Length: 128
Image (cartoon, rainbow, N blue to C red; front, side, top):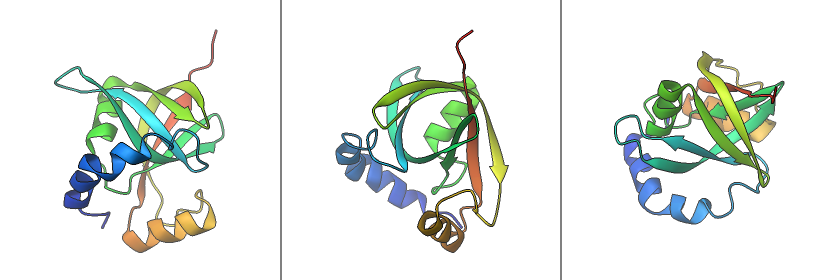
């Protein structure tokens, strides 16, 4: 089972306010810029993200019910800042992989341990 929602709420109030300042520059982390489904408000959420092929894969450590993931799925797009560079992502989709072999060793081990077997895959929107 992914991490409890109570921990997600605590992170949103405390830790995320600090992490958001550096996550867009650290390896394995990113900032997802998304719009609220109901409020229309802009949000920025620090996440674990990894470049896979022509897109990015996001670990859903709090499960598929995370507001940021639901917002991205509803909008069918988002922006992500990775290592100081912001790119536009499209075609988000949920995928499952119990092995988490796509993630670097220690991250994959943690994902397996907490049972976070669902991830969000998005494609980079290439300029035309």
